[in-house]
Amino acid sequence: MKMDFLMPSGSFKDRGVAVMLNYLKQTGVTKILEDSSGNAGSSVATYSAFLGFDSRIFVPSNAPVAKQKQMAVLGADVVAITGTRDDVAAAAYAETDKRFYAGHNLQPYFLEGTKTLAFEIWEQCGFEVPDAIVVPMGQGSNVMGCHIGFNELFSAGAIDRIPRIYGIQAENAAPYYAAWAACSNVPVEIDAKPTIADGIASSKPVRLREVLAAVRETEGMMMAVSEEEICDATRRLAEGGFFVEPTTAAGAAGLSRLIANGSISTIDRVVLVLTGSGLKAVDKIATALKI
Image 1 (tube, rainbow, N blue to C red):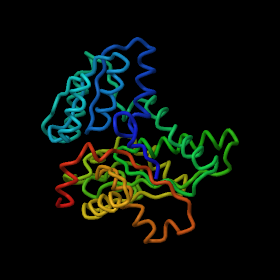
Image 2 (cartoon, rainbow, N blue to C red):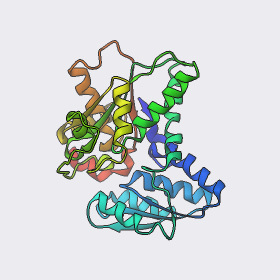
Image 3 (tube, helix red, strand yellow):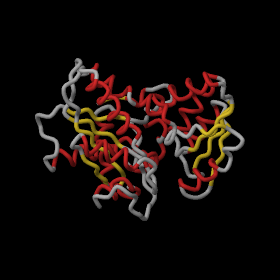
Image 4 (spheres, one colour):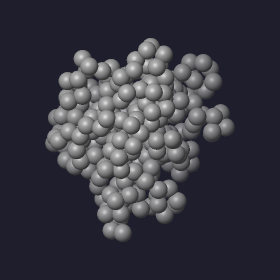
C-alpha cells in the first residue's frame, strides 16, 4: 500500500499542486483559479495558504461538505456550481480573463509533481521496480505521473523495465474505460451517473490519449468497478486499518478483480496507491457501510 492519503491536505493531489504552485509563485502569479470535485481544491487551498496565493475554487454544489469546508477554512473563495462536473469547469473557464487558471488537469507542472510517485515507489521498493501499479483514476494524473516517472528512471539507466500500470474507474462515470473497451483513441459518449467515488467521477476525458498510451505501453489495463465493489473494498480496507474514501477504495476493488481474473498473479509484486483520506467522507462511508 502506498499511503498517499497522508499528505498535508489528505490526498495525493499535494504532489502535483506543490510543484505547480511553487512554479507559479516564481513567475509572479498572485491570483489563481481552480475547478475541482474536491481533493484538488483542498490541496490548492492548502498550498495557496502556505505560499500566499489568493485562490478561487469552483466545485460541484454536491461536492462533499467536508472538502468544501476544508477549502474555506484555508482561506479559499469557494464557489459551488449546480450541475455536472463539466458545468463546474465551464464556470471556471469563464473567469480566466480575471485570474490565472491553475487547473490541475491541464497544467503540465502538476504532472511534474505526480511523477514523484514513481520515484518514491522505486526508492521504497529497495530501488527495484514492482511488477504492477494499481491506481483509482478520474482524469488519470497518477497514471500519467507513473508513466513519466518510470520512463525517466528507465532513460537514466536506473531501472531495466517499467511496471504495468492499471487505471481503475467507477462504472457509473468511466469515460476512459469506455474508450479503452472500444479500442478508441477518441472519447466515447457515456451516460454518467452519480457514484459514491465522487473524486473520480467524470463524463469527459481531458487527457485521453496520454492516459491510454501509458496503460497500453506498459501492458496494463483500464477497468471499471461497480458501486457494490467499491463499498465492499472500502469495508475491507477499513478492516485492515486503512481508513480511505470510497474514491480510493475503487482501486482496491479493481485490484481484487485483477487478481481474480488472472491479470495479476500471486507472485507479482504490486503497489496499490491509496489516494484520499476517509476523514474527508465520513458521512458517505458510514451511509455506504450502514453504520
